[in-house]
Length: 236
Image (cartoon, rainbow, N blue to C red):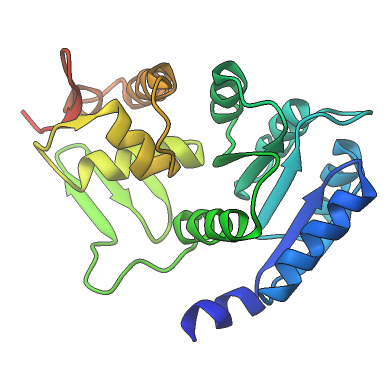
């Protein structure tokens, strides 16, 4: 019942240049109780988001006018709305590029309705503003570092640090499990919801960005590389 109630209040923007694909996606999503908006290309999608806020975007990659990569980049300039990319191309390079541009998941066509809805629900559960599970901490405080999950803010050195949604989620995952060592594959699954292997440079690039943004104080040193394994968060 709780999942259904959440769906009824959720608006999803479907961006695809093929009318038949938009119609099919609308049918799948409305059957689950989601509200659906449509856009035939990236430029129209960016304009639609400015007019009508949505909680998730289903974004085709191969489109005229503005392709999915350019659209995702444009969306990330002003919005943290979750993005799931849809494409017939499943190469590793495409997946990595999509993740590094700020996409939250990647679904390769053809896909089953059950897979799509499961991924939509999973991404919405991880989205900014999603309610934490009962008993889960909403604020972490360390020397020179405060992470507020409810407000999705990070403060260090007396200043607020601007993080992308995935940078924040990665930091929260590490900091809420101090001294635990995560492999890159585990971080991909926990933060991005991906079970694919071979995307390690996506994790590495996000860790690099985190350290850079947290530099100037003690906090950058809290993220440790465990050589040959992955990363951990530890205050030393």
